[in-house]
Length: 170
Image (tube, rainbow, N blue to C red; front, side):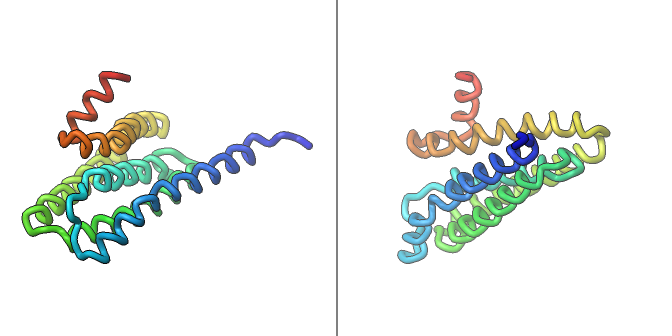
């Protein structure tokens, strides 16, 4: 039997996608509780907002115009983006008016950021390698923000401060 690098890459990618799907679905009990009680109680939206923008960044990274042959990156992060939209819709539906407006404005800001990044990278940067490098570096920052966002909830600190501390430690 001959080792095929492409088959191995695909197999590892599928395993990674399964693990990522489990990660995206892990807050399901929390959102079931929110739905049953019709209240977000003291739950913070920041981990879900961070995951929303992170998935959007990785979808941008995986499109063929930025990084060709990344179908697994696009599919799992597209699914994750959809899951996060559902979570954020529940937050919007069951939050108090003041909190709802804040969440809504952050979502709009995230969408504007993702759209602006896509337009700028696709129009100003000409090669796949440069596009992949630029968007990939931003994706790494998005990953740090996503994984650090629960820490911001624990210490009641804005996520951007956690991000800067995380980058400093790395």
